Length: 568
Image 1 (tube, rainbow, N blue to C red):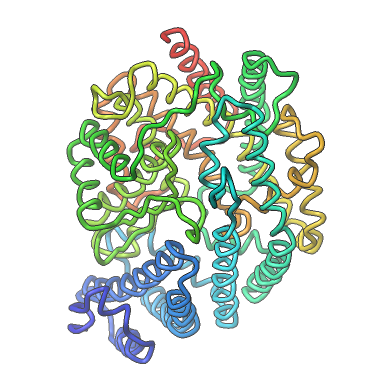
Image 2 (image 1 turned 135 degrees about the vertical axis):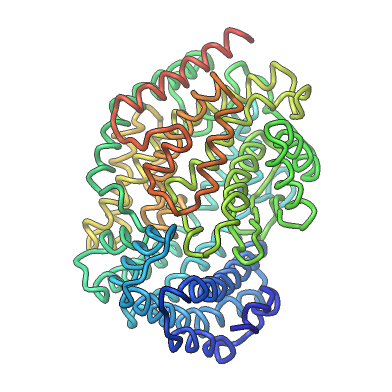
């Protein structure tokens, strides 16, 4: 394995499957015993990491420019040739290790994960998994192409987020309606894509010998510490604790704005009628400001972010043809993260970069772990890394502490964040409950019309105080615009659980900021070698679904909002 260990990720990304396969074959043929197990695992880890990093780099290339046909071709070639071959080869190595009965200290949880993945593996699923990835890329292209003409220039829908914060209500409504009209133009295209995805996901479950896709996906996501029933429990807790709090905040908003009801374009405007916060003009200013915040929070975290700036590991500006949303991915062999987002000059961009920075710090902190398989962390804790960072960094938003704002402006930013965070839990419950319904009713949910009906029902249950009168088409198609539903089934409850964990870490920081940051970093450094509840505990939080824990977090947020308002 000497040559594979010396191949750089850039060199490896140009290899064909015929060049890669011999290394998998050699690993499978090599006899393993207690004396050479660590070396064998190291070689496997390097090979798996190179394949994974190649995929991530190709994925990045098709999201930074969804119109790049050459990048799309390279991505599809990888899926058609390397992806299928490497998945089959990985399965053989998993079976080899499991059959040996050998174990290594610190590898207990990765071994559990490998056992679960091996159990749902089906060779006939390889082309279906590749097809699913291609359909997900199709969704990115549809959304990435959406734009309107606003004030005589072509504008992406992401760029309109700044307009939604303008005091002029007519202007906000016009922008919102134009964006919705453009989104509805793709309604049929996304419906057709959805039908194909539902067929693919049904086949994945059946080929794995499982009765439904939710069971398949639960194993695929390596969820060992909670069940669908826990998700239902969390939805009920949200209905009891977070929904009343959200209605309280919305009613306060309605009264403050002097409105008879809250329309979708009224949810982001400042309550005192002020223009939206404008923290930066150029993306370079965003980078520099967040770099200062991280440096003030913790010098080592500041160093990590500076590495990303120096090595070109940030793509932050919004532009036409760029995929929607934001993410942080990892290049495990290089030991580096990469942050992607769509900045348009608003406070939400500052929060997003800090959030993704938390993910990036997770990569840096866990990169010292020797095996690729040890670095795989449950999404439920990955999102703690990012959401907690938003709260830990909040005290440094002021200019005198490295950030962007005056004291009054920073208070506004923090109020907006906490308001959004509390109101997020009911929306998260809508998304999560919708996904459970979809895959418990696979045949019915394969018809987008039924999805429209269910989405509207859940909106009424958890978010019934928003006024969508006359906007029925816009309301019922909300599920199409939540990319997690289309692209990453069941990946959303993580945000709600992680936010609950992050609020607990924030609570700790109010008493001892230095210790809270140290505990946070310690938990991140463990990667996937500790259970999900164990990682939460190391970070100073409890992995919980109950109403009492959620109510304490909601109360903490409400009290902080009122304190900041009184201070202003």
